[in-house]
Amino acid sequence: MKYQLSDGNISLCVDSNGAEMISLVYDGRERLWQNETGEWSGHAPVLFPVCGKCSVIVNGRGYLIEKHGFARKREFSVVERGREFIAFRLLADEETKKVFPFDFAFTVRYRLMENAVEVTYETENAGTEPLYFSCGGHESFALEKPIEDYEVRFEKEEKLVALVHDDEGRLTSEKKLLSENGILPLKAEYFTGDSTLIFGNLQSRKATLYGNGRAVARTDFEGFENFLLWKPQQANMICLEPWLNLPDTVGERKEFSRKTGVVCVPPKGKRIFRRKITYYE
Image (tube, rainbow, N blue to C red; front, side):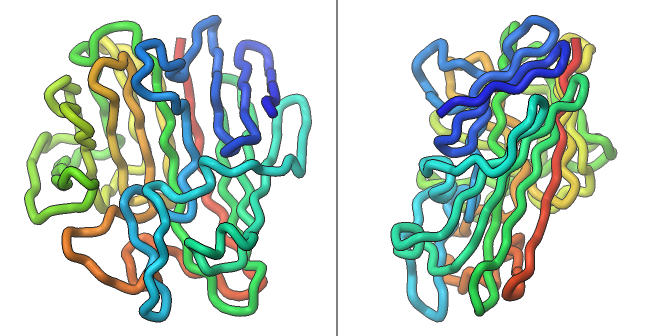
């Protein structure tokens, strides 16, 4: 079911299937990708309990969890709702435990804030054993001009070293230095095939999309150390994605609890990660 939020000059539509933002209009313009080329039907998937190609091995047993986890394909329940906010919740069940053997209550909240959307991920341990999880965002940003007219500027001056992945999305040992000042001019060649730019262990917690020298949108991602950029080849959009975990490396077989970026929640405890996406005229 689709739910509409509105606050003056910004309106948001969210689908309970995946708790996904599917339309965001600000200043009279649609800001999320609407699949004009038929290449990607997503808009802003919620990634839980893993981001990317990340295996789940618990006590030596492997679970066949799919890329980006299962939350993006599950129906959430609405647990809070107002004119400018809404919250969706997903609970562990027999199906989730086949691929992720933990009890959890995962809540996604959206709140409109003038020209921004605040996104909150709350994960509660509903079991009696420690819960391990990861989560992340996959928001699209619709572009009005070719990709080469845009750049991403991080808040700090840092080296942007892309971690190369194989065709299945696993990290290799190869790395590519793309920028030394925290500013990345975008190029179509970065996104051939299903290529993704993966930046790990960033110092920045804000990234701004610029077009022809003007700010288009900014994403604040406090608590997230990893940041990815992706687009379908012909789609005039770009996804800016804060992740907790990184994809597996080639040949990796590590307990889920030992993976970098995977969070531990004690029984009856909870962890909250809060982000904000700001749009400009």
